[in-house]
Structure formats: structure tokens, C-alpha cells
Image (cartoon, rainbow, N blue to C red; front, side, top):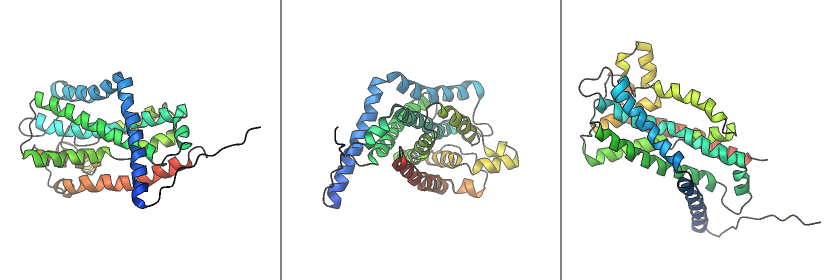
Length: 274
């Protein structure tokens, strides 16, 4: 009969040492996620190409930017950037549920590492992938005629708001609740209506009054409107409070959502396999 052994996480003395330990573990988990890119290039390419296909389809076939004077492409591209960030939660959910299904998360929990490192690594990898997606979408937007007009500082501010929208921990929390990759499809059914119930493709002024009011308070609409303002693109302003304070809402909405789902995700992770 063999005696059971328990591996304990080393407890470094001092806050600085504990922080260094946490950062080292988080970086290790981030590198693991990045290594998947090299091993699964097809999935990476699909995630990059899909939003590009949507942009080209709505630019040349369907026709986005209804109700906006001037070049509708300058209205559509910033909205598509926001939509790409919001739809990124599907990729997060798929990655986390696959790890859960294979027992990888349980294996990590049994190792001597900071418990939150797995979640932080996943989130950091999402941010890096989002930067690549934004770079690709910006290049395609330039190719179809979109431009920003307010200088580099404002453009960086717009990118910051887009990444803040992507930083939402909703995908991680929903993945741990769902537990299986098959459940991602059910979430997609909910994500798409929320994404299209926004001002990404058309201005609220072109919609029925009640629907336009709902659209203006969509967190994605706030980010899309704020990004258009920072880029100097037409925003289809309606004069409502939500439209006039889009930059404020583009910060408040994600911060409020993170404040809800971050502790829920950490708590759910701590209770896995108990």
C-alpha cells in the first residue's frame, strides 16, 4: 500500500516574492496558450478570417452603415472592430471547455502553482490574439477605404476601449458553467442576437424608436460609438444621453461586467472538481 502524497505550493515570504511567483505562473500558462497557436494554425487562421469575411460581406454585399451620410465604410469598420472583440468570447469558451473536457484544468489544479494563473494565462492569451485580430481588421479596413482622422493618440485610445471590451471575463465564466464544448453552440445562439442588436451595422435613428433606444444602451453600441468618435468617423449621432456620453459608457459597461464576472469566474474555478 502506498501513502498518498500532497504537493504544496511553495509559500515565498513577502508580497514581492508572492507577486513574482504569481507572475511567473501566469506567464507559463500564457506561453502554453500561445504554443497552441503553432500546433493549431488552422484554428488561428479561421478566427482571423471570419471577421474579415463579415466585414467584406457587409461592405460589398449586404450594405452596412445605413442612415449615415458620406462613406458608409467609415461607419461600418469601427463597428466591426467592436463586434470582433465581443465575438471573441466564443473562442475563449471553446478553449476553456476543451481543457475542462480533457481534464487539463484538474491536472493544473493539482500542481504547485498559483491557482489563478490558469485564468490569467487564458485571459492574457486572449488579449494577444485580440491585438493580432485588430491589426488584421485594421489592415483590411484600410484596403476597403476606411481611414481614421484624429491622430495616433486618439487611435490608441480607441484600441484601448476595444481591448477593454474584449477583456470581459464572461467567456471564462460561461465556459466553466457549461463545462462541455458542445454547449458553446448554445451560447452562440445568444451572442449573435446581442451582437446584431447594436449600432454596428446601422444607426439607431434608422430603427423604430423603441428599438433604437434599446440599441443605444447596448454595451457594444457604446464602444462602437466611442471608437468612431476617437477615430473621427461618422457616428450617426442621435442626441441622446447614451450617444453623447458614449466614451464614458464604453468604460463603465466593461468595468461593471468585469466586476461581476471576474469574481464569479475565480470562485467557480476554485470550486471545480470539489
